[in-house]
Structures are given as structure tokens and as C-alpha cells.
Image 1 (cartoon, rainbow over the protein chains, first blue to last red):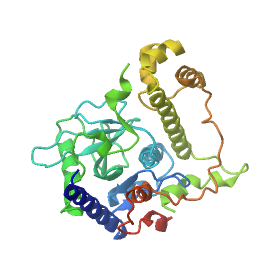
Image 2: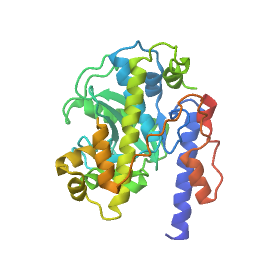
Image 3: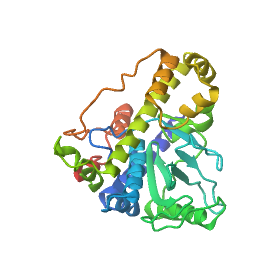
Image 4: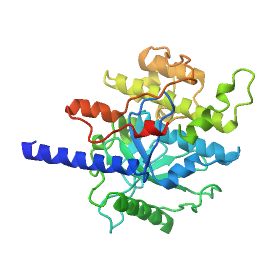
Length: 204
Length: 137
């Protein structure tokens, strides 16, 4: 890499990190804490919607159990444990915890989802701010109504609700980081450490 | 400490005479246990892959079908103690050191993030304070 390109990439890295840290300090984003005593090997940034969802009081029951599973799914990412990722839209199976969604034609970059597969399945729409730093924007039920979420189930892949989830994520990014782009490209190592592709783990 | 943390530890700290630990808390730690176990198994498998292990070889060594091995190594699941033992024996002739008890109570927040490590590697100072998380704790 030439000196100029090296300096350019360093400046880009500096600016996005300064930008997201400022959003955290300003209370626009919330940094998910790992379970006390765990290392923060990755960062998950939450929107107000998600922070409120994880923090609000809930009566003991199915909703509280499901929400705690969601919390552990997100904290598992922060703790830096191994993640299986699917980068091919529509091809994620039960192995993949994170999948890339098909980009909308009008958007410059594709959105991702964190896949919480235990029934009732949930999807957390997200983007990679930088390597090992995810911006989690909104959580939607996958197929069935979930009383404690205000969103209707996403349903089929080509449904308007999927499109709305992707649009909401794209809009959140543009509002938070108007001058920056999320991580893009096909190299998994640019997105996450300690992760493998869905197919690589499955090979015999 | 964020609400979602205090909620988890509320009943845990009550000791042997405390109330029943709520099911939602138990579910959280069940999920965490499964994720940690999966991380341990997949890390061991990936390490042994460097030494020539494949899922087919593991299936043969552990006396299981390739489909079963594929399922076990695909995602966190409800593995039995017998299955875990078979997997570890087949992968690396190991016993699971993973099962060492460590108290969940009185753990101190680790003053570490992956960002520190990157800064050290780059030989640069952080662009801004990074202990935002700990201000909230």
C-alpha cells in the first residue's frame, strides 16, 4: 500500500471512530455492555429504540425470556465469540448468526441482520461502522407477532416490511453519519475478527 | 450498571436462601452457556482443521454420521454431555477444561476493549475517550 493510501485509510478510520464515539457521548447511541467481567472484544452500538427495548421493565413470562435471549445474542457478539456469517443474500441457514441482506437498488450499500433464531425468531437490522463495530438499528419479528415489539412480522423476503426495515436502517445511518460510509466489500476479515463464512464451517 | 445487567444479577446475589431465580434469567444463562460451549467446540475444530481434521474424519473418529457432526458444528444447540465428550475426543483427544466453575458474582468490569488493542498495534493514541461504557456502569 502506498504511503498516500495508507494515510488516507488511517484518516478514514480516525474520522468514523471519532464520529461514533461522539454519538455515544451525546447520547444518540448506546454502547452495549458485555456481561460484567467479560471482555469487550467487539462493540455493538444500539439506537435508542434498541436500548429502550433491552432496558425497560417487563413482567416475567415468554416476552422477558425472549428478550433475554436477544440480549445474550448481542452480548455474545460483544464478547468476541466465534460467529458464522453468510455474505450471500437469501442463502443464510441456521448456521449463520449474521447475514447480508439483498441491497435495495436505491441504496449505495447493503444492510445486514443479526439472526436470533430461537422461536419466535427475531431480526436485528445492522451495519458495520468499522471492523468489529456494529450499529444495531431496529429489531423486528421474523414470522410471528411478538407482543413486546411494536413491529409486524417481516414475512416473505420480498415483503414491504423487509424493505421498511432496510430503509429504516439506511435512514438511521444517514442521519447519524451523513459523511461516512459503512464497511462494504466481500472480505469477511474487513468486518469481523473470529468469524467464518457459513459454507466454510460446513465443509466436509 | 445498565438496567439489563442489574436485572440479571438481582436474584443471583441472594445466596442459598434466596428467591427462585426467575426463568428469564435462567434462560439468559442457558443461552450464554450454549454460546460459550459452541465457541469452545468450533474454536477447537478450527484449530484442528489446521492439522488436517475434516468433518468426515471427525465423524469417523467419533462414530457419528457426517450429518450429525455437521449439525453439531453448525450452530449452538442442545448437546448432551455424551455428545460433547464424543466431539472433543474425536477432535483432539481432549477433555473439556471448559467446565471450570467461576462465580458470576462480584466480577469487576474489565477495563478492556478491542479498541485499546488496535490503538496499541497502530502505535497511536485513541482519538477520543473510549470508556463511555464504564461511565454508564
